[in-house]
Length: 192
Image (cartoon, rainbow, N blue to C red; front, top):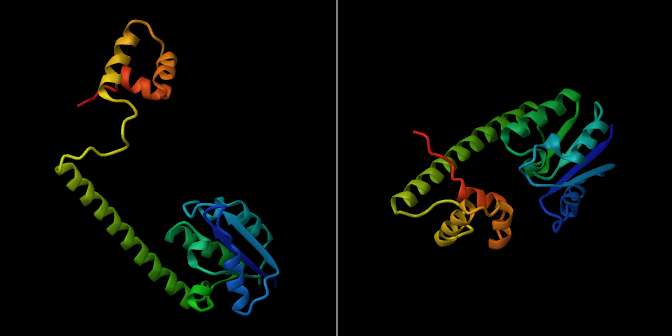
């Protein structure tokens, strides 16, 4: 029965050493440590070190993480990860919950509540975002990324292209990408 630790940080400027120290300060001796440097938006199963960790885990092993979000991207991903670990017979402990084993009945209850709260937060975020976008539109704001060219440049590109200038030549001339030129000289037709 081995004790594994897992840490994750989002950028190379960050270190996962604090997560490892937190686990050790809780009284655990980590025999195998795995850590990823990847965005939290990546599913757990897509992370290189987490994949290696999963290959090493055996029935009776313990996996320790400092916080729940280290185990997955969102509530469904965390739930799927914990279920797959429980199916392997691995005890999963999140120190954030006071050494609570997520495969235990109390741990499952905690995960279910967290999943419900996370879903509600996600729904509220979508509502607030949509309300903000609607308000911005009502105020006449232009949404989206700023255009790389102004109206005069776009008109000049269209004229030059109709006279035979290539897309590549126009891209070099205006120091923009070919797709920017294409969106100006061959705009998408709007279908009703």
